[in-house]
Length: 282
Length: 283
Image (spheres, rainbow over the protein chains, first blue to last red):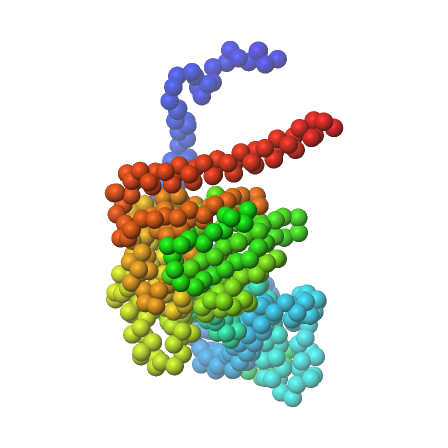
């Protein structure tokens, strides 16, 4: 069977030394040219394409769907008109987000360092952490609202719970994995327990803490807006819910885009802080 | 075996470090066995051994960051219990803390050695130690901005800043290129010979020439399990010159002796393997 085909001469089977160039295909050349042309502007082009698609959908959606798809221009106008309201909403939302998240950062790191470096604490808390951490924190919202005196307090609590676990778990893992050479050096230098935790374990596990803080921040925004859908009288999630109730979709879509932007900026800020704090990581 | 642990007569003074039949191992694996060692105050002792001889483990035991499974270790006549301020150590992997700049790294040691001084005095002292290893004015640099040789200089400065009479060094120049290695060897000898009060150094290496060039005495470790095979006196006046060292007939004799010990060690291990093999063949 094999012999039957050996007489066919495949160009790449030639015995001559040297590598043969792959056969040129014109469509590939075109693609390469195009890619070269848009290099560095890919995201911008995609954005323009998406806006175009959005305009088309808004243009051609008929009947009752017309109201569901406000065009980009209409949405931008709505965004401009409700900017003062959105800014007030941002302020109100951050009054929930900041205390909840910062409390989670402080508690998560302190507790993570203690548990990560103390074997008996690890043994005591590990089973509970494994059960409690995966519980979706959104499920606490109704109970938190019932439990706490004000909506703000309950929302802060929920944001705290949601952000705490990833920060705590990551920091504890980092603190438990401090490289042996740092531990040896700390012992040779005779550092006290507090000095060891503060000057060695804390910075050494900081990269882990920051990845927990990233996950925690994203979760915080989810929890914040969900909690606001439930029972707030101000805030970003509340803004979207309010105009959805009135079927004012331009404002609602504007609220979604605005919230996305705020979330993005917050994550960028965290990334900046991280890069500055971890300048020594190579 | 006892006569192997003779104390050299050339080095006078009380013992800085002693080990009495120290052994170390985990279940099923003996790493060190019957280590009897006596290091005089102010002595520069080279611990020479192949990999698997437990030389790093022995140094960690002396430092107190490992606990022997048998025997005891004394430092200045006192049985050691863990890492204490009378012994300081330089590790092979220039283990400075990367999130602190050089001065902060050294200040960590000075804060322990001189807790009574003001912040300003401590800082000046740290600068002084940095100058001692030839890195004046680089205090604000971070370890990642430095070459391996420079990092190891800082590690030495930090170990000196602890101010302990005993300095333990675990292949500190093992990862350096030959030129930097020679420079740092000379720097170390300079610092050691000028130190007052005198410093006792235990220097672990697998490099025969390094052991002979630096040490007053070379202790040779055999492998599997780690044990002391021999102790050689290196009776060469200081300061030593590298050139005459290489050609000196007496030194050549010492080198041959060391090579013989290592060959003996290897042959013993091969015999051991052979014995096991022939046993198996018998079955």
